[in-house]
Length: 389
Image 1 (cartoon, rainbow, N blue to C red):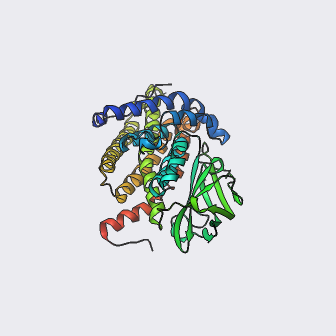
Image 2: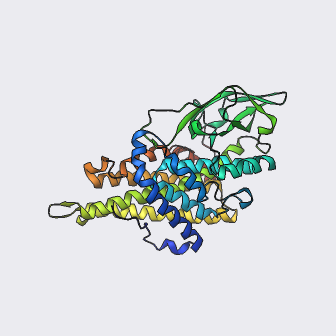
Image 3: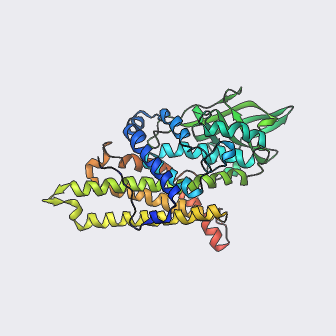
């Protein structure tokens, strides 16, 4: 197996700081040594590699762009993006775990929680002592979360939750769920803890994608949630959408890791696979495919860096993040399929990562906003006309 050295045709590394390069290389080595040797086995067996959670926590990967006062690494957003890139080069399921823990659990507690909630939960989540999940999507409401039916009713000392969520990463193993429910018609966030009466999180089986990731349902049957578990700063649909925006940013970076893994595999294979007395890399059609892949990776890298710098300046727009998520996911899936073509029949074997990445990317392209929804988000921004109806 060839050692992965990165994909950088345009000297993009020169745009990163020394600290950003150090973070990326540290995670890159971790993926090579701890994830790639075991991930195919976990993918086959439909399990998540739980043994890597303490290691990722020790490296500061959970909530890594949140403040140090809460036990987090306080990286900038470009370094955070590079973490996501390298994690997904290992597997989308590994990046999803960290992305959910960071962008969809720690971020809403940091953004909408009170100081008591932040001081209690964030250090535990950063250390991997607690695992979280994010409950927004419902069986009948995906792209239209405003239609959710999960609701909360105020009672003495707290709230009673009823409803269900679906497609929830980490749900079955989570110690706390950030659950979005309607309270008097307004969407609010609640901290629902494992073991609360009436709360269950059965795992969803039968997936052909994201198999090295735990996907669950969340079921609430008259679940009593105490007053102190309401996220006081949450107010309306904007709150969960802000969380999704953080996750989409991580996805835009993450899928570049998948692109790199597929391209690197295809390039090395094409150089060594002999047909008609010469490597298939020597044929024009194969070269056209490789050049196309490299070009799209480079464009995605540049898109990510600019959005990361804007995010660090505090000026990034959610529509710009939608552009990166939309473009990069589409191109990543396309690159995975082209890589499989170059590998021919060998491309379907788990000796190579290409088919696994391709299957995973089918989900990644869909979650945190489908390709179509991001098209309409950007479309409304540039024309002034909402076309969601």
